[in-house]
Image (cartoon, rainbow over all chains, first blue to last red):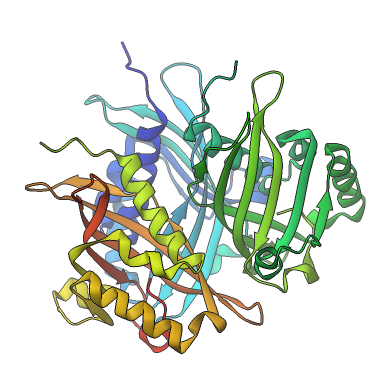
Length: 158
Length: 158
Length: 158
């Protein structure tokens, strides 16, 4: 039997996820996903049209771990970092064990020289479930960017 | 008899409101207001001085509906969109059935070419009540912008 | 015996603090600290290296009050204001009566001509306790800025 999941847990998952990126603890980032998951970055235009193609795509946690290794080799954190600011998740019930939510985000990019720019805005469209230990994880996270030109600089996950 | 209203409901109202604008579901935006309401956009300077004049003004829900129709004809969403990020409401008790709160906001504007700019910052000064069905709605929302030059580009409600 | 402190209280403290700055009620800003406190602004690089030096430093509430008086004489609010947007605090238990949390922030600066810029991003690393009246206050607030060039314009507390 599933215990009920409340908003506070969804908020905590979202902020833990953002912190793993912002605090340069990327190795812990894949842990926020189920082993069998979907992670996709796309644009609002493509999302509205139902296009499957995305700026980044992974459908297992292993692919996310590979991505982190590549980023470490490429040393992108030497060049820039992010700071996420999140809205409050809008949680909706879903069929079966999964729950769904949408959460607004704004990501500020910090360059090595200290320049701050609004790098991306959008919403996370998520499906979550509890893993075997009862911890909430993403079975699906679609990052829908408002701005369509975000790909040119995309390196660190959003 | 009124049931008590908690912070979670005020948060939900605020985020639902922002989502109706950000997700281009403007037709649902007037539903967040009481039929007999006040909606006003002003600047921090004018608000501090007690000036009534504002950058936008409506005192019925019907006026808000008219505004949405005008925006659809003008097709402003083809040209830009917004993304709101909200603070936590500071709720204070009020006389009678209404409750009051203040909520910080930052609005990012997304142009068609993908340019992101901080468009407006400020606070919502709100009065809320429950409508006949028990749903929380704004009887008054005063949008107090920190920046005094916001009017030049003002088209979509904040 | 201490009563237990919940997330809602930490959220409220954080937002009250930010509001005292954003709403130009700086005289109330020292009240968010214990009399014997630590307030320090530093950069992520220096914080990671364990450097004690900071862009701003105070270790009593009286020093914070002095700082506010200086700011009023310098009239910095005539020249710019801030708007804070905060993440959800990540609260961790601590030894003794104190509790600890980390909270992401983004600060937008508003110039007199209406220009809005992302001035600073980072995280607050906090220790909090209840004062004699049971109110939660900061015994320690370290402001860790992501951007290393923030000092050039630093005037109002973050």
